[in-house]
Image (cartoon, rainbow, N blue to C red; front, side, top):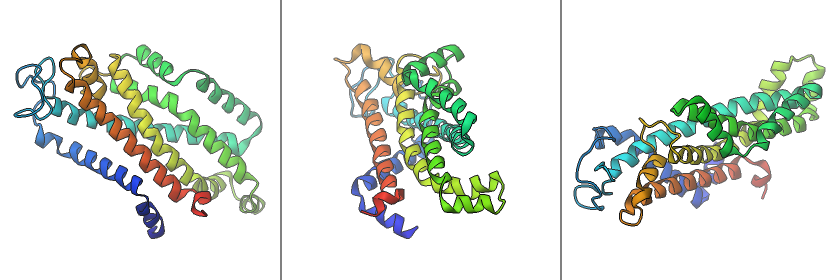
Length: 275
């Protein structure tokens, strides 16, 4: 563990990304204290530029942009983490079954996976949310639906590679059950790859959520970065700050997540550790 932390600490870009994410988590934790009111509440004149009473200005309705961004960060983290966690569980289950049992099970599950991958991810997400009606739960379901196939293919490949290893064959020869072989010996050897890829999925989930909210397919009663940008696009030339600051928040958050993901991949990937 200490060696892994030392390798991660040597990656300055990964440390910078971790610092940004830590700051985002602190902001989310302190949001109820910093902005105790309703983020949809009207707090001042409309289209006030940044500075003075309103640090990041106000939007077209007189809402505090800084408060909107703070509450939008909470929405992005909740959806990003919950959708990614569900996608990892579903993808690991399907990929593990396909890679371990092979044969007809593998063919059926991989054809199902390929079916989901043939549809453009964002188009499929839009379709699912439109069918289920816009809400946070619908967004999570849509993001899970477009995210699990990549995890499934990764886990399936890892299980196929591990299936011929000596320790797996020895366990099978000694009469170990399927559950013991999978959960005690095969799945732990895939954990590093799943964590590295799963970290990157969080950034993708945040981007998809922002895109859905921008198109009006997010929950209208929950503040979101995409919703803020959508509300300010009509006055982009005269009130640039409404779109700029939430856009920068999305950029920095996703970039930080990708940097941390690259750092974790470098630490956990045995091929990269040998370099």
